[in-house]
Length: 374
Image 1 (cartoon, helix red, strand yellow):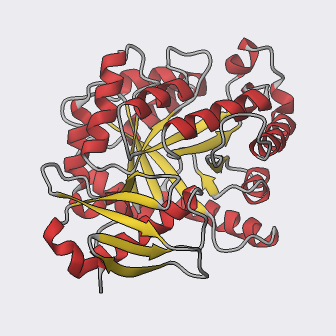
Image 2: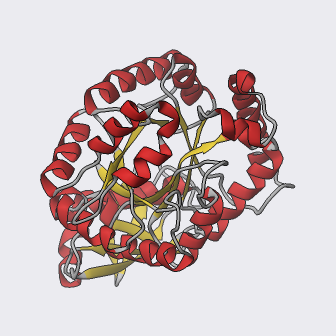
């Protein structure tokens, strides 16, 4: 399971300087992705703009909306172009998580009808897929990875229907996550989708002297004092709890767990990295970083490493080289051979080319020929 970290985009009072420092630290410490939380009527930064700022100061870390409230984006063509633009500018790093949202004030702020949000979500998803297939709108780049959020059967069916790679849970504990993921898999199979859906989850943390209560009790005040206090009490406050969540969600079948902050201090990035431990996603500072040039050969029927030709590693993957899936497949191959988690391998140059530069964290460069050339 990959370990990701949220940006403090929804923590009131976060400065732009804190936001970009947070993004830089998260990449340096090896987290798999940076996530955002979406609201309209709150003192938060808009999700796609926050991720654009993060993209500008990073090279490899993933960018995830967890989730963007789709029915509040009433123009599917504009949203399609915005997400294509961010995916292009970031080098194909965007995962677009979409959900419904459940706050009346968000819907009222843009004069949207909350009672039709399910139908509106379907309309947005339909329009998005049309825009992404239309080369007259947006830059010529593969669309972002699509993930659908929600905890009801209709959400599970949407995750299987609209070409997404899977599903993201809200604030579910590991056992409830496992139950819902099983239902997503059932919907996936019923829709005739190949393979299995990707499952993502999230939780909150506040380490060191940080107190999660001021932010979380305010953010969730609409649910009532008791529930808001319960959510605040669930935030991970120490390394044992962080590792307990990691173990629980990993056993539940989660592919990527995003820890969202409750304060804006960038030191929280280091505290979470240290708490998670290097064995749980490669978040150790001060390690060696090896880079290897890779030449993708013509597409084949399977993914494989073909050995070195001089200093260049030859590889073959089933996906086309301009597709984000090709980069993911290549990183997975290299990670398996090098014996590191996939989150510690990234394409840092040549995202849409056959000629790529791949970075591997925690591996001695001198060892690469033996690890990858066999």
